Image (cartoon, rainbow, N blue to C red):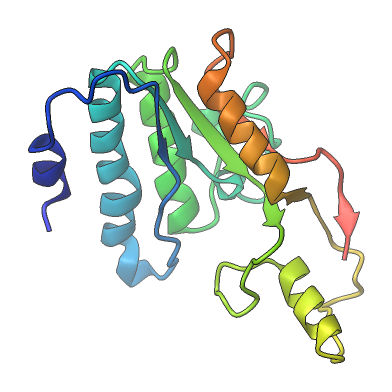
Length: 193
């Protein structure tokens, strides 16, 4: 389907739209999916952002912590040179590409990218390929099964509750004085497995 055509055939103005959330993406990381990832995660996000901004709405989109790659440039967009970030796969690159586009298009007055770290919470499906380790450990514990930890278990992640993610999304849409751009949605604490 031609996403742009469908988007532009929507009513020209939806009245008093305050915010548009775009949280969807494709995260398949094989090289054969590279063009699809760029089309889905960059081109279509760009179309939706332009439409939302034409509605005079704030646009909140899901960026990704995957844009930081191995973290060598740091994990804070306000201190890192975005142009020097090196994502490790095409998914991270496709998200990073939109972060850069938003910055260079001058959209940062009405756009907020939220970079979710390792989100966990109730009803997270442990069978999903997008599920984090917390839901997998929880399900296995509830089923009386052991868990598999690769390495020595000392590897760390920044685990953030879905409740805090939801709160951050509301703040991103409703705080007038919010400095727009890209924000990490995390705890700022490393927790070992």
